[in-house]
Image 1: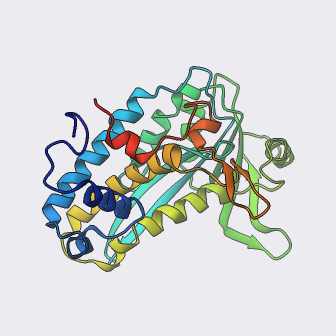
Image 2 (image 1 turned 30 degrees about the vertical axis):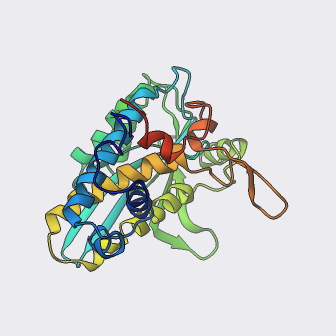
Length: 285
């Protein structure tokens, strides 16, 4: 194999390497892989460290065009318990129109960690039209600081999941003196339904939790699990944005099979084709 590819000077076969990467990206526990691929766990982790590094390098080469602006940003938290006494926590920012995972951060459930994700969004200051959040109190000041341009604040819809009525469901409202109706009208114009909701990012959140589900069942080596939880989300982000065609963005047949694949990055205008895993693994940096 050529120098610079993932296969260069590896003792593992090409098939074994691909199997390990596919298993990792689909959420299979690393500690369960050795009997399947006949490779030590240490070698598997070393390989996957290299794969995640390649994802990050490749993503850095694909610069989002200056005219890419998410019209709508959903922000939500992700929380995974490990044996009930340790936790893996993070925040996600999602372009709901293009189904594009903009970025994520991990850390504690506090304003310091939340601010880190808003710092990644400040390039859209005064440009994003709509923000959807839950009722966590820290959001408001960071929306004003990083997404508002002077007196111009994005429409901001809130869903409060701790308050529920039989007639209306979860309580929803708008921030900054805006009307709830104006938020719902904007959502409808973007094809995202008629009610304030964060369902799209919650669906993404659920996929990530499923990917990291094995973390809940293991009590040993907790610090390493936390570290690999972040790597798993990083791998998922690349898979979701660049590699995997999104069903609702793609053209489908009468049987709902994808006929013309479109990834979130393609829909957002960040890349012009569906990138394959083998393309990443054989790319010569």
